Image (cartoon, rainbow, N blue to C red; front, side, top):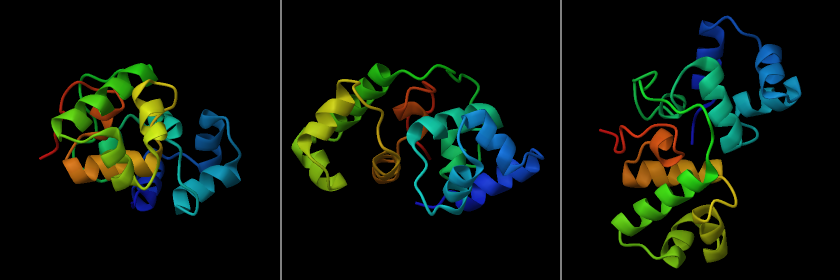
Length: 151
């Protein structure tokens, strides 16, 4: 997973400081700095918020696409929608919750909690699923309906 250069590039092109981004996210600048340096993994919730603040897609932040922004973005985070999309992707790929959990090196109960919308998919799992199955992170999180698959 490599998004640190992209985060810094987007932030500086928008003429924003780390302090300003941290203020938008309601976190300490040092915390944001660790995300930008990728010393800490940025939570999916903050990725969502950052994509809104910076007006770019999560796929662009992850460097999955050169498309900066999709036209049909949902600004409201919905864990239930994200969970149902995870279940849809899992079934399309003929995976049980246990098989997906093994791929992600987690437990079946974590996958079940994601699918029920109890929690938002953790960033490393989001990245791995999207990369492995060529799925848009924006689609999987429910931010956009199109594109579903990345080219």
